Length: 140
Image 1 (cartoon, rainbow, N blue to C red):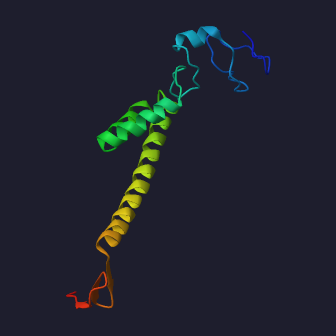
Image 2: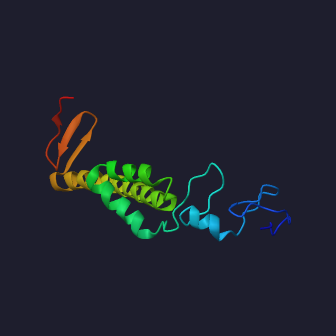
Image 3: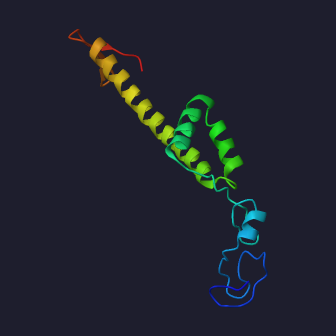
């Protein structure tokens, strides 16, 4: 077998040319490695790795119900063999963190506005004003 880039002779099971470093189109080496092609000292990435929307949605939903533990464990388990899938789960978790933070800020703002509108309570200068009632000294 010869390298298509430099023309040097290569071992029949070689994955890359030792002379120029170009990946060889070698079906024998690919079958021996389980379908993926890997350079030396590199892990084999699964060809079924799809980092699609549903993996991100899974990270979003799991982080809502498991306090971010399960998405982090999935990321650690999948980061080498399924890097796209692991990254999608982590992105889903990050989106959930942002959504939860924004919703918490909105809820707090609505509670404050509701309290002010319903009870008509404003605090100013150490006095508590309730509606149109007279100013009452407030203990601070």
